[in-house]
Length: 587
Ligand code: GLC
Ligand code: MG
Image 1 (cartoon, rainbow, N blue to C red):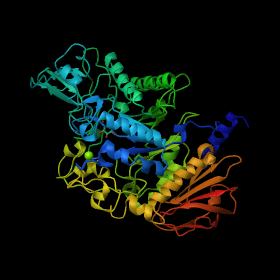
Image 2: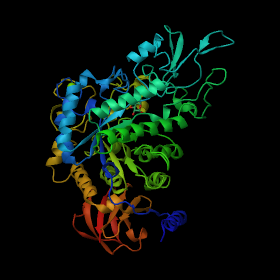
Image 3: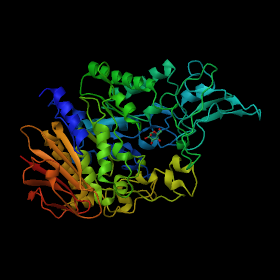
C-alpha cells in the first residue's frame, strides 16, 4: 500500500472506532533527541553541596552518576543565571552569568566537563520573554539610555476622562494576579510585565533585543550545552498598538470565579501570536548554524507552550522552514486529574497530540514540571508506575521531572513557608490554589537528615513528609521499587526498536483501562496495559487487536502487581488490580 492509502486507512480507522492507530516510522535511524529521555532538574531543590539549604551546581555535578545510572539522555536545568530570585531564577538580572548561590561559571564548566565524560547532555533554560527589573538593560531603559530606550514595552497610559487620573494602557493582566502594567516614576511611563512586576517583558519588535537574545543562545552554546528549553514562549509578542498608539483591551472570558486572576480575560491579544512562531524558527537557525560551524550532535530546542494544538504544532516548522525539535506536549498535564485520572481522558490527550502533529515529526510526553503538582499526587499514588510506563510506551521522546522516577508526592507548605510569587501575590486563604511550591520541595536522596539533600538546619522549602520511604537510597536497596521500574523502562526503550520506530495503536478498554500496542516488522510487539481506576477489572486484550497471540510474556509490572515478570499470561481473561500496569512482549 502507498503511504497515502495507508494514511487514509488510518484515518478511517480513527473515524470508525475507538481504537487509534498511526504508522511505523519510515526512518529507522533516529537522531539522539527523537527517542531521548529528558530529565528536568530544578537546581534550587536537587542537591546542596555547601550546606546553605539551597541546591547548587556542584551539588548537581556530584549527582551526575545517578542520572547516568538512571539511563537518561539529557538533563534540562531550570534557570541557573544571576537573579534576585523573585520567580526563582525566571527573573534574570544577568543572562551571561551564574547565580552566586548556585556557583560560578567555573563550576558550570566543571559540570559540563563531567557530564561529557559520562555521555550526558546538558540543556539550559532560555527565558526570552522577560528579564529581571534588576537587569542592567532595564535600568538603562528606565533612563532612556541610548540603545536601551526601547528594550522593553513602555507606554504613557491613558487619562481617565471622568476622574482625570492616569490609568494603565489596557486591562491586561499578569499571570501572577494583578495588572500587567507597572508605572515607573522616573521614566513617567508604564512597562509591560506578563509575569511578576519584577519581570519586565522584553520588546521583540526591537531588532536589538532579538539580536541580544540570540547572543545569549550562542554564549551558552559556546559553553557546550546541547540545547535549550525555551520558557513561556507563547507570550513573546503582544498585539501592536492601534493607529492612535493605544493598546486594545482584552475581552472578558466569562470565567468569573476569581476576577483578580488572568482567566477573567480571554488573553487573545497578549499570547499565541504569529510573530512568536517565526522567532522560534530564527532560534532554530541559531542552533543549526552552531552545529554546522562547530560540529557535534544536534543542538535541540524544546518549547514551553500551553496553547491550542493549532498554534503549538506550528512550532514544529513546516515544509519550508525548520522549527523547534520538540514543542512540549502538555496534554497529559492538562487532563483533569486530581488523585486519579480516567482512561478516556488519557486517550483524548494522546489523540490530541498524535492526530494533530504534522507528519514526520517527533512526539513527546510530559507528566510533570516545576509549575504543576507532582505527577503521583495528581494521577494518584497508585498510578505512579502506570504513568511512567505510559510516557515511555508512547512514540517519541519523554520528559521526567525530578522525583517522578521515585514516585515523589507534593510537599505541604504552610503560608509562612510559602515562597512562590504565584502564591505570595494571593492570600493565606486561597494560596494553595496557586502555589507551585509543593512540587519544588527538595529531592529525596536518602531517609536521613533533610533526605540527604542538604546539611543545613533549614532548607529553602521544607521536605515532603514521605521522604523516609520515597527516596533514592531506599528504592535502590529494595528488591522492587518505582525507581527500579523506571530504570527498567528507560533500558527497555533504549534497546527496543519497536518502541523507537514502531506503529502505535491504542484504546480504552472497559472504562478504566488504557492499552497501547506498538509493533514493527521483524521486531517483538510491545503491549502496555494499565488499570487507572480504583477497583480491579478483567479485560480481553484482543478487544484492542484480534491478531494478538492467546498469551503474552510479561516484561515489566507495576509495584502493586502480584504477577511475575517472565510469566506467560493469557490475553483473554486478564485481571488487573487498581493501578496495576503491565508491559508485555509477543513475537
Ligand atoms: C514559565 C516557567 C515558570 C515561570 C514563568 C515565567 O512558565 O515554567 O516557572 O514562572 O515561565 O518565567
Ligand atoms: Mg547550596
